[in-house]
Image (cartoon, rainbow over all chains, first blue to last red; front, top):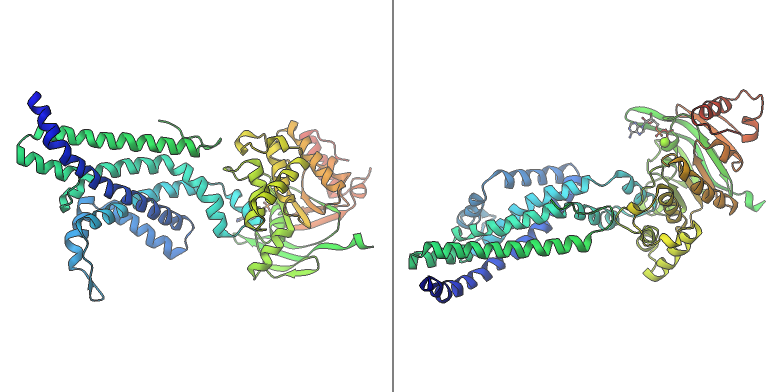
Length: 230
Length: 255
Ligand SMILES: Nc1ncnc2c1ncn2[C@@H]1O[C@H](COP(=O)(O)OP(=O)(O)O)[C@@H](O)[C@H]1O
Ligand SMILES: [Mg+2]
């Protein structure tokens, strides 16, 4: 047992810490980008014209309807062979992971945002219009603040999922938490110890994110918009 | 006769919705400081008419004049001007649920009138005080009673300095015991010389304030006149018959 502990502290932890930072370096930008995409796509799906609506609906169907692993393989392995106007875009593993996660996450986020937008009573939009508030200001000052509060629990859950599926970045050679863990396990044959510790790292990340989200929910909580804690 | 100037004129307005002719040529003229009351059965087109006036529903035909200026509804600038000059009160209050009472009143001052935050807050507090809700400024709609919500919505409209207010059944969504506080605010407005058009079933209340009743049915104004004439003893007006039916249903005495 002592041996295992010593092994953990000398070999596993320092390696995993580096992997942890790599994971965070993917999760945070992918989550932010995913929310931004989700808000944009969700808004277009509700208030866009016919074509913006069709295009965003297609986007959501595509990214919800295909496995994330396939999407990642596409961004990393296939995209370099796709030539757009004679230009081939080659993404680094980290870039491919961030873009892949953000686009996939954004598709799900847009569902929650859409639900939040649809929950807003039409009368409020009418009142805003009657006051001379422009459609843009109405979306920014009336619609989004309410939709965001309604969508927050769902969006938060999606970010929790993102933390967990960020481990898939290892399959496109990113040396994040899972990738580093696999490397150590292969080199040392200490599979049990390594993967238990990797699991604990994710658990810590998810717990931290959950705690942060609850903090935000409480911060934004106003009477009439209470988050139902399930 | 300066205070007799015409604020709002509506000429032969026609509106189709869902393939049906909802407004079938409606005309009316409102002079400064007067209250016109729209009555008539549900589905007559009262809400549609009010929403045509501030172009929430652009009329298909006919003309709307505000302060002598014809509104064609084409330019955004003109619509912005129109909507700042016309305050609207809805049956369901339509407060912004995520804003406090004060912020509800303030938001359009900042976003539309481009007032700075301090001045807008100050103005919002004044308007809340005017409807007797200064002490509720920090509460959210979910924490207010229906009557209080409607008073906030009146304050919100007043803050924009409207030339005319359109009130669409302002008390119809309220519990009976809350109607009085909203009617009191409307009476204050009338006394202060606010020009208004109100759709309502509160016949008794409005007959003492209105200069004209307009009885609507199937998208037309089929009867109009001074409340005292339409509701005179022995009158066989449609208005009288309708009011009799209303008071039978609700116990509210008309006239
Ligand atoms: N968006 C719409 N599409 C189709 N019909 C509508 C629409 N809005 C209102 N109507 C119809 O117009 C008629 C008049 O409605 P409304 O103006 O709300 O009447 P009132 O306010 O007098 O009760 C009703 O028969 C209603 O069903
Ligand atoms: Mg109505």
